[in-house]
Image (cartoon, rainbow, N blue to C red):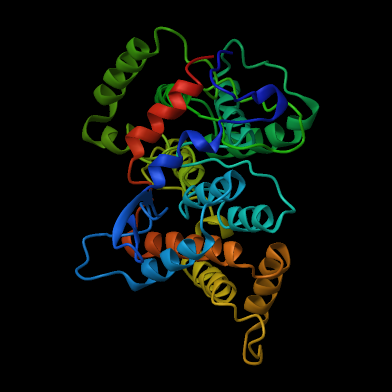
Length: 370
C-alpha cells in the first residue's frame, strides 16, 4: 500500500481534514466596523446559492453565528468539514447524522467518508456478492477462504444469489459472468478522513470486490457480443451498469445489483424484484424528522413544550440532544450547517460538494495506489 501525507490507515488515522478546508470557503467576511474585507471566508460554500434570486436568510443566520465565534480552532474546523460530508443518498444515512452529533458532543470519533468512499463493511459485502457469483459459475478461485467474521455474511449472500439465479444454463452463465466482471471492475474507495480513535488498522485495500483480471475488458466485449447475438434487443437492460449509474456508496446500489441478478435468474428484465427494506424506503419522511430535530437544537428550543410531539420524533430528538450536550454557540453553528446541508439535498436532489473534482484529486494525492 502506498500513501502520502500524514494519514496512516494502519493506525486508524485517515486523510487530515485540513487538506480540504479550502473547499468550504465561500462568502468573504466583512469587517463591519472598518467596512472592509478582512481576507477570511465563511464556511458556506456548499450550503449557499443554487441559482435562486435574492439572499438566503438561513445562510445569513448561520454566518452570523460563525462571525460571533471568531477564529475557529482546528478541531471545530474538522467538525465543520465532516458536516459537508453528510450525504443523504449514502447507504449509511441517517446513522451518519448520529455519528456526527456524537463527534460534536465530544463522545465520538472524527472518522468520515464522503461521496464515493465506503466503509470496509460495504467493500466486504460487495466482495461476498462477487464470490457468490463465482461459486454459482463453478469458477476456479471461488473456494477463496473467508474469515470467520465474514463467514455468516458470505453464507447468507451465497444462499440469496443461488436462490435468485436458479439452475445453471448457457445464457444465464454468460450474463452472470458479465455481471461479475462489471461488479469487480467497479472501484471501491475505502479511504477516509479523520480518525476512528481506536488506533487499530483499517484495511482500506483492496479497491475491488475481487480481482477482475488484466484481460477483463476483452473478456467483457466477447461476452456482450455473444449475449447480444442470443438476446438481440432484449440484451439492452441486462447489459446496464452493475448497480446502476450510482457509485457503490449509494443506498440503492445493492438493490439494483440484486434486481439485475434476479432478472438473470428468470431471464426476464425485472421479472424478479427483491423485496424492499427500510434502507431504501421511507427516507423522505425520516429526513423530515431529522431536520425538525436538528432545527430545534440550533434554534435552542430545548425548553419548548414537547406535548403534541409523536413518540418517534420525541425519541429521535432526545437521542440527538443527548449526544450533542449543552447547546453552546459553536455546536449550534455546526448543527445549523448540518441542517442546511441536509435541507438543500432534499430540495435540489443532489449531493452538495461543489468542488468535487478538486476533492477527488486531493484524495488521490493521499491514496495514490495499492
